[in-house]
Length: 438
Image 1 (cartoon, rainbow, N blue to C red):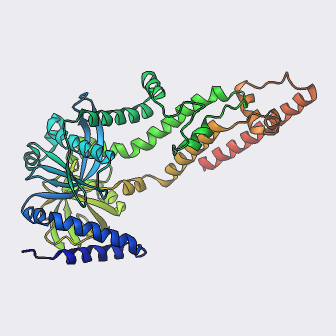
Image 2 (image 1 turned 180 degrees about the horizontal axis):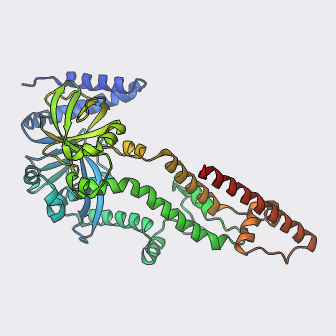
Image 3 (image 1 turned 120 degrees about the vertical axis):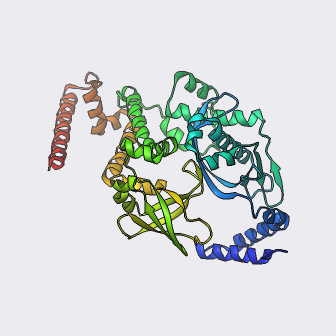
């Protein structure tokens, strides 16, 4: 006998969607109603059988050493799994299509490898609490749920794992390029100029970047050097958040404090729960980070026995409280959800980015955009080249300027214009330095 009927569940879900998205279309709500009715009719008995199981929904996994069985190479992965049943040893990923597409099969297999690697990696196994370690042991199965059917994923499919390995290799070669890797990418390209794939979403930007321009003459000298600088800026932006993920997934929070890592994170104990407000007393080792935690405004709360590398995350807002106690306001009611015990506090990606001084982030983005435009600047017309002082200035500063093909009068006028432009740029640079010193 069901405690709540299927229509009541559907009405509750649709009402929540109307509150979250007031302008949602009626057709979309009707589509959700049909999906839910089909799903509940087929799965309600299974849902009731799982009532006493240890089941997590929207569970995060952060694995810096996810290992593939095909090549035994390890890659970092961050993902959110729809459902994990630790008693039935089942990973569930859901999609709305009647038959799951290939990318869903790839996604589920990645989650399985990430989960199993937590136990197989000696370094990560030590990080896991004993209870969570025992919960992960066993043979896992992976299921893709759709509104109409359930699909069992073959964990031994070598073709799917090869697709995963190829995807990680592509990303690795883009971030850390090698000659062998780029030659492989070039041989397996979709476009074979002059025959190009016009359905590709990057068709227009690719054409803009592959223009064969004649001027400035230093274009082919400067472009690879600018791209190297852009790659360093990419590393800086990526590492700003990845450093936080690596730190909390590899080391214990108490070890990070001893190492002097001063980003917002802490361990504490829940001392009270009232509706959607939670009181957490921070441990003494993390007292030096209290100011940063309060400035973060938004935190993620992870209850025991779970950890940063595997577990649910409850999004909280920091409210004013005493020196050693935090009052957190959670988006949903916490009554009966989290037992009073130890928790780990971390920050989300959006919150972490706000910890960076705004001026440094703005300067980094401005520098990247400026260098990107500079790498694509140029023209193929000689008259336009003569009329654009910036192009001539680039050639003059790099020693590529060609004065021999012009008349003495034009060459003299060009030199005078370059000197005046150079003086103007030097004047601007001196003013910028003066402002920075002040």
